[in-house]
Length: 360
Image 1 (cartoon, rainbow, N blue to C red):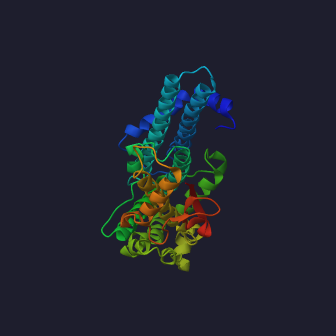
Image 2: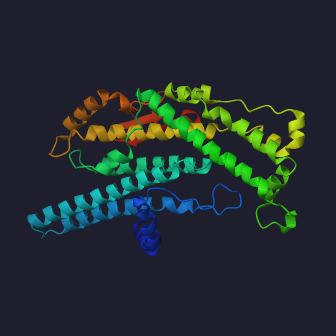
Image 3: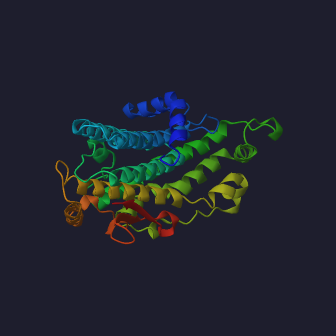
């Protein structure tokens, strides 16, 4: 945003009506799905949901630019400088508050029961984006400057008793809800008439999937359920609770020849279907959430009064090391490191163990 400030500002002005509508979703309690999970239903404009992040960053930068401009005027009295500083602090606080309210709304809407695999993956992408942006904002503010309460709420860990089992139960439920929704999408093929490919208005690949279900739609339903059912068992909650990624790698179901004849779609697509991406995404989403929750927890110690930077860092480090058990993540607990620079980092499951880093 700083590098392209004028262009981003003009973009935000042009997009203002849409951005206002997306931000208004923060007060929504659920996402209506009037068409259900059907192949021929229109998809929501999910891409619009990511646009406010740029606006929140712009508001944060604008506040700092106005503050810097006030300081650059040599004839400004001290009272004016203090007022400009307070105004910048207030506007940056509001930008962070908007970001955190949007983050909470995206998790509430995209992870509600009945949402599909795509929505769950998008929810994880939103957590990644908002966590990075909030960490960048916090890194530019003094340790004693307040943080919106909405941020602690948006990144609160999903608790359970004990904490490890809590995250496992939450992830297993999310997997099961999403795969039931995917199964309903598969079932919707049954009522569709593919016609001839040159008459079909949709994608040709979509037409092929519809056509392949017509031989024995019940067999397709049954085999589709079989491919998904394992993720709805207590085994998966336990695997998450223990941070055991290998236990979440379920072998694809083996279909006999007669089943393949009855339902070619089941053998061609479901036979090698893997939901590892979703399993990794749910795990990493909670790992990133708890890393940010830990960062906010350490800052809360210092809010309210000026603090020497080195002393503040030592206090935050000590508070981090004594953090409560609910901020730990089985199999992916965040680390506080000094090199190559001071940061929190957590190893994710996706990307074969890539590090996710937050600046301090």
